[in-house]
Length: 238
Image (tube, rainbow, N blue to C red; front, side, top):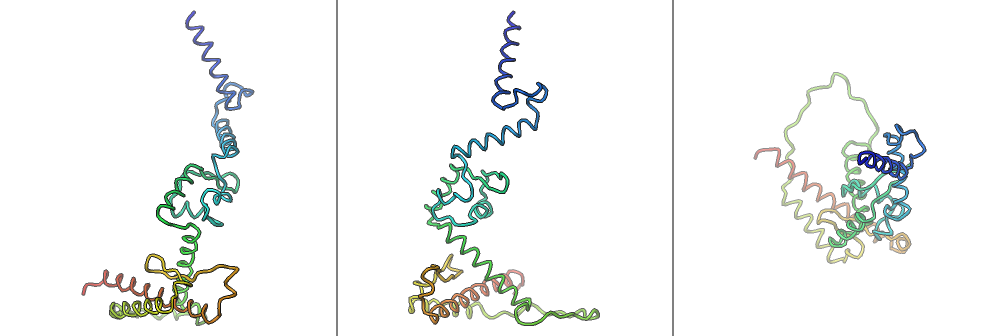
């Protein structure tokens, strides 16, 4: 008698679970199949999204005010953000984790939009240097003769590190004397970037814009040279 009651309760529990999952109309063997559970999980995520537990990529700025276009993929790549899923072509992010991330960014005084611009500017600058190094900007393509081989060189005799430091020193004095901090941001003491506000840029004198762009190039070039010297010294025994 007790076993019959337990069996009845188990059947009722199974029915209720099937109802929650939304498979109560399927044959019993299919009610908890992998496909049925996957569909239920998808519908549950949709319900959570509607309740505001998940934020679409286009709405991240509602939580992180300084976020800009493309910030979803950026935080996944740069901050290893894990709690997200993709539905169709849209990324959805857990609201609680976004709030926690926003709190941490504020504590570290990191403007997400500015950080995104910084990384983009770094990438463009190093691509520019790479293209110059490869000769893509100044000369046409060419073909190396097939029998041209075995042409080598001794390790590069780089300029003294002090010379590069002196150049950076000179640039920083110029930065201070000309009050370039009004037009240029320096990040991590190693990369300079001209400040841009779209609706104000056209009112800046062309000569000042040119001066700032030249200063940024010189500063970033010197900092890159310094890193290269350190890299060479780490590979060569003096």
